[in-house]
Picture 1 (cartoon, one colour):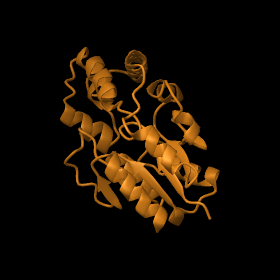
Picture 2 (picture 1 turned 90 degrees about the vertical axis):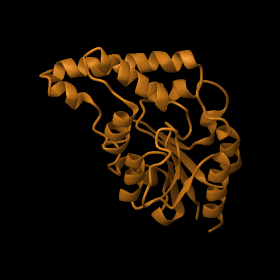
Picture 3 (picture 1 turned 90 degrees about the horizontal axis):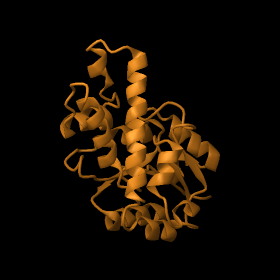
Length: 217
């Protein structure tokens, strides 16, 4: 029976987290909310609540918040376009070595257009059998919906599948789906403990070793 690897995108396959932070920071600053890196980690990557509650408490109606989220998304799209591809170094060779040995899918909270822009060049997408984005994934992480959909689509069992994530909410989603999860550390979360991960690694070389161990098990 085949094994599977389910990949998060932002912070794992692409170096996009900084641009998303900056888009949020800049929009919120224009409305009197200072979004520090620490707040971003706590509100976006751990609690998955965003920072819009700060404006709700100031009396902003939901319609105004929706417009600000749309403006944030526009700025983020522009930043991705200007960056001209943000695939992390070492990712494509690693995917090529894994292809054929495991069934692979991307499982991300990103919009499909943002995913496309992050990997604008080369052969990146040919390594995956399925892609699950915000438009198709159901409830966002830390809910398990996206990973359950991926298991069903690829006809994989939980014991023969591993997730690669970089955030607490992603780890929580994987664990809620009953899946083992390897975490690759990012700059923003370098010291986070990631309790419950099957492995925590610092770079692509260590990630490949962890994946090899999974495939050999």
